[in-house]
Amino acid sequence: MTNSSGKVQGSTTIGGSTAHGVDSSFTVGTEVTVEYGPIAGTISAAWGKTVSTSTTVSQEIAADIPAHTTVWLEATSDVTRVTGDFTVTIGATTYLLKDTTLDFPQNGGKTAYTLRSEDAAGHVATLRTF
Image 1: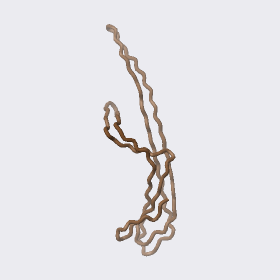
Image 2: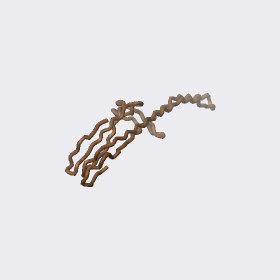
Image 3: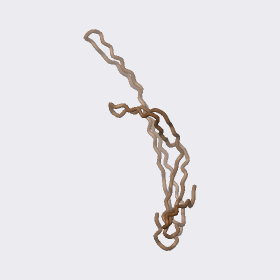
Image 4: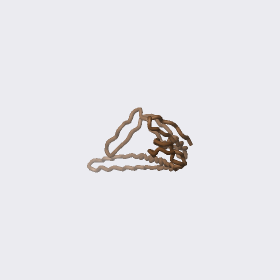
């Protein structure tokens, strides 16, 4: 939000929301092929599971915006960081992702909001953190 007027804009409501979602799925399977002369058969079994989690957090505040100033709201959330080697299969192609870091939002984690401003001279300031 930008106040390009020469006056202080009184008590403008600024709000934001963050939504985080995680889908995890895996499949475990086995396959056995039996041949006896001209007769052949295959037996296979598979089991899979998909888990989905999502969280939405909203926050609104009233703030005075000084003249000739741009104001924005930043949101940061708690995450769980996992590092390692991961195998990803897309269609019939399997990829090995070595030394990879993945960030997952924590279910029920906290979201921190920071209100920042930048004046016409390019000076950035933190107005409020909540």
